[in-house]
Image (cartoon, rainbow, N blue to C red; front, side, top):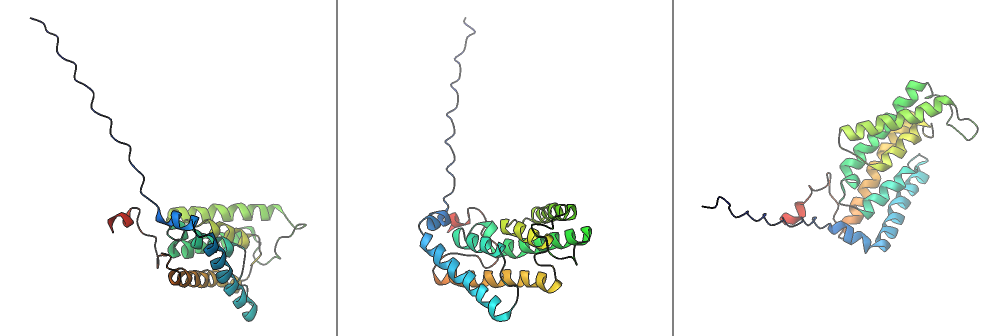
Length: 200
């Protein structure tokens, strides 16, 4: 009697998982005109408020925030939660860096005024703000620029630092209204969980 037995055939390979669709990417790829118009309206409105109030309501990192909220409105990094809390982390990181290096009361850094203190302040602000955003899962790339704006002394008064966060909230509110009037989905606070659109 033969002891040989038939060799079992290998199980069929599992089909490759299809990544979930990303409606916001399809939308933004087809709406460059909307991003242009929305950016003009939102940043223009904040800049006009800065002019009329004589305050520091407008600063470079707002442009990056506006672009994210208009271009990928449903991405977590663009959500109001990540935007507002992320910039808060940037402010905290920049302020701590100024205090640690003793630069808080000194004039802002210029092309001919860079020192090793400024080098340390810039590095510390990025480390602290990045660590905080990672720790609390509120990543927002534009907030890293805010950390450098503060740590390099471009806005170095308590009032100015508070106005940074006020401006961020104001810009987010303007873009929330703009997006919803245009029929663009944008969360009130946090971005929807991954795959949430598939359950609808």
